[in-house]
Each structure stands twice: as C-alpha cells, then as structure tokens.
Length: 182
Image (cartoon, rainbow, N blue to C red; front, side, top):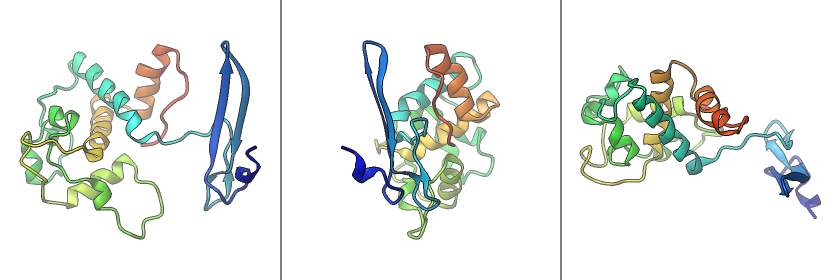
C-alpha cells in the first residue's frame, strides 16, 4: 500500500496503529532528510508546528508557577540585544499573540534550505526593527512569539527547551519521547 513512498526521494512519514493498547502495526517510509537521503524510521522525530504551542505555553505556566518568570516580564529581560521596540513586549503578549512582532517566516531568505530553529527566529527578528502594531493592541497569530517563548523557557529553566519538556511535561505524564529540536 505504501510502496510508492518507500523511497529516499520522497518526504517521509512514520505510522503506528494501536489496538486495545497493543501496537499492531509500525512502519516508516521515505526520507527523514531528502538532501542526505536518510531514511525515516518508526523513531524519527517530526516538527509538530503549531501543535506544539500548547506544550510551550504549559512550560511557561510551570516556570511562572515556580516564580522563575512572570507573565508581565518584559522580554528584554531574556534578550539583552533586543531592539528598543521590544522594550514594551511582555511574556503575556507573546502567549496571547499580541506582541506586535513580525512573522519570522516573512524574514527567511528565499534561498534558505534548512529548517529554522528557535535561535534562528531570534536572529531573524532582532534584525527587524518594525512591529505589526504596538504591543498589546492587536491580535496577530505569531509563530515568532512562540519561538521566543521556547528560548525564554530555556533561559528561565536553565536548560534546553527540549530537555525541560521531556523532564517536566512529557515524562511526568507518561510520555518518554518528545521534542528534540530548538
């Protein structure tokens, strides 16, 4: 059924079928890395895009509950080289998509061929001096804000974002595998 996808020149996928708590089918097809022609395996990790925002927000809540960060902290607390326009942006505004920050996807060079990591998001948007709107005044869905929140979690927790998710969220809820990019 999946033979057309079991090649290294097509983007990959992994599948698992569980029935009554037992794994009855597990397979992977295609390439995890098209350029290097690395095959997918059932253990291949995938970027979850916006699905992961709930975990990022939960990590922020845990740090706020522990007093390590505050929703009202200005993000310049975590980013010393931030442009002056960021001086009025709070963690709360990143969480609620009201920071006014531009979407980093509009700033990616057209010839880019590698995935953008959270550190890349910071570098891209720090060069951009404009905001969509003054902080707190308008809703604009923001992948940028959540990329920056992942970095804030790292800085507030004192460990990599993926390690924090695994140790404080996924493992404590019976999930051992999870985020590993940054």
